Image (cartoon, rainbow, N blue to C red; front, side):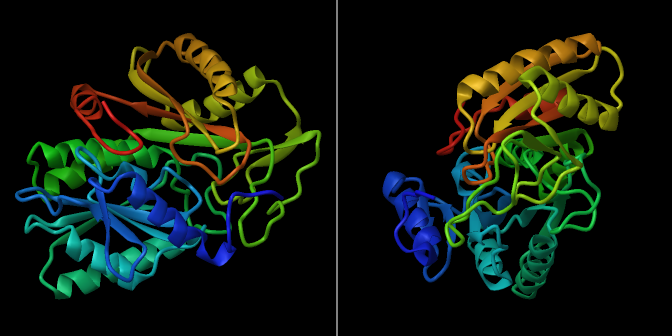
Length: 331
């Protein structure tokens, strides 16, 4: 497989250096780590928000560092959790005295290492709270998780909690907003092809030319079923129906939607999916308040997409539409 890399062992380090070169006024790297933080942080009087996880999901996570979202993000090796030591250094670097909220996707390594890091930071006198995002409605347990996986809905947790922190909310208020999003969001994805990790250089799983995987995980974990190739409308129907059944929303409910590319899918195809998604939302008596289409949480070069639906009220609409200025998301 052809990739724009040098030595696979250096790909995460070189990626972070490239991000710093692109955004020198926005980001800085903690010495000796794979952690990026706000260049102007920690921000006085504001709760710190941190996240992180394995690399390969860009722009997640460091792409969301900035005004209105994260204060720091730790990059593990590809599809591998950052270490507890690096996470603890990040928490300490992002604390301005108001405490820090860890936003963690539900993968066993991430949860364990963030919990250890929180304990380490607590010994340094830093107040730390943690939320775990588990928005993937496809499978309850997978190769990486006990319970549902955390996927693209995590971006909305970053956004709403980040807006609450930027508005001066205290740690308990910021955590409550994060949990509100978690309680109201669902996601399901599909893979048309496997992704190719830099170290392996070949597909991580075999998928026939006439097959797709429904309910795929962002590390390439198996989904709910492998089926024959379906049309865009059929795939959208399958994914959306599963998400809406899980959320069980009342008619008239306003929602925010995301059609998220997995890294190798053209925007043309994502917009085709969004066309059908919005039709289905209307058919269910729901009202779309906002709709995002693009690459928000990828799986290297995997072809495919995920669909996220989040029920919103006036509070969440205010937070999700609040000003934001990060490398990957502005508005």
